[in-house]
Length: 79
Image (tube, rainbow, N blue to C red; front, side, top):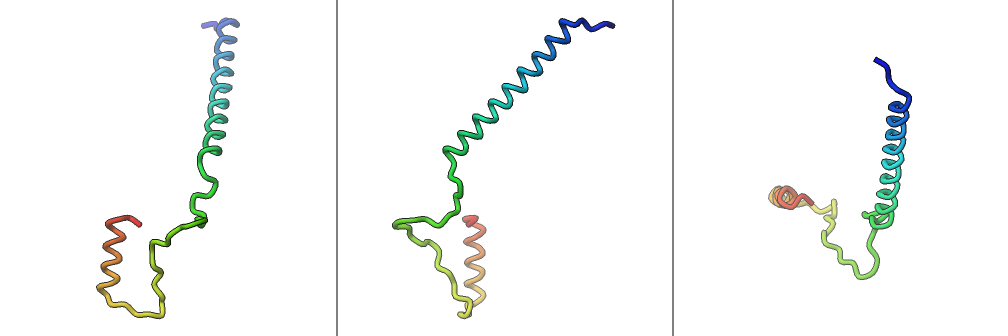
């Protein structure tokens, strides 16, 4: 079975076109992601931000029911 030179060049041209389009698409998606997604989504907010969670002082002792309630809230909300 012989493979003609023309058929080999068509396959090579298709492969190069496919790789070029893939790299171009990846570059465009990367540029768009850098433009629209924040660099650090977990940074400390500025302005009139409101603190939602009250930090518990470790020197204060809490009863077991308080820990169970917080654990249940964590499982319900996932936060």
